[in-house]
Length: 356
Ligand SMILES: Nc1ncnc2c1ncn2[C@@H]1O[C@H](COP(=O)(O)OP(=O)(O)O)[C@@H](O)[C@H]1O
Ligand SMILES: [Mg+2]
Image (cartoon, rainbow, N blue to C red; front, top):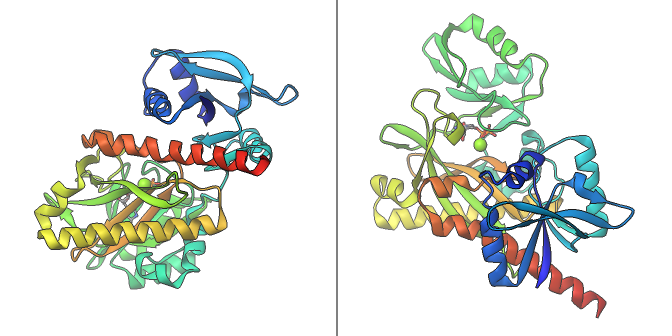
């Protein structure tokens, strides 16, 4: 049995140590690891003892995490979300000496958009996106009936504002704010929303609806044991009618993708749409990974329009995977844990082959 490092956020480690549940299924890492001949060692970057080349690893007892000092594992799956400088620095340093996958990458949505835009094949699937400036706001007000203003680095729908033109007024919708403003007031309103922060403007996709609510699709795109990008699962996230956000943390609900699609399209179309979503998601992953080769585990938010054409909304580099569980898609949920472990295992054989 070989050890594989699973690097988690500090709070998740604390929960595990206390035997409390979190969205990370530590038992899955252990069970699937066993099937693959791997023993997961959970730790946070702060647990690394550089001088001794050791780590205060934590092992799952079936109930909680138990600490034990061990050698730093050769292969490490990074699941840390935190952007704190010292944490990032440790992960970078680890990446130099060990095989860290899903390491430190550019997450800024605007920069990700730009590096994807480089590939002409992907452009039809990318909503128009630009930095938030007085000029770009002007352009988007003139050009798009619906657009979004959102933080360049954000999550769980925080700061996401939908702007809808309705005749001579605009409707502004977010999880905090709902109001209608006149045309001349909208610029000031948006300026206040953004303040001095780094935001972007993005064309609104005219999303297909399910039970009168828009939905998007979480696509888990991961590298498998053959080092090939594959789709481990797809699930629909139906938006909250009030704030129009599909994030589970904002009142969205997860529903099996086929339930949603077969309500809207015939079987042949459903197959075609699924295929297009997978193909597009994999091409996006490849382009992203051209710039950041350590990527191996992505959770994409994709949308489809009324005709079933796919669009990218956002790429998450720390897929919480939880929407699969919420939708009752346990097989897919497990797959999102299995593929990254298979990939990690294949990195070990590679390392061994190099030295022998
Ligand atoms: N361009 C867009 N077109 C349509 N819906 C969008 C768009 N951008 C965001 N949304 C909606 O808002 C949600 C949150 O936006 P997202 O970019 O995923 O931010 P976060 O990182 O906070 O999850 C999306 O899941 C989707 O439901
Ligand atoms: Mg999102």
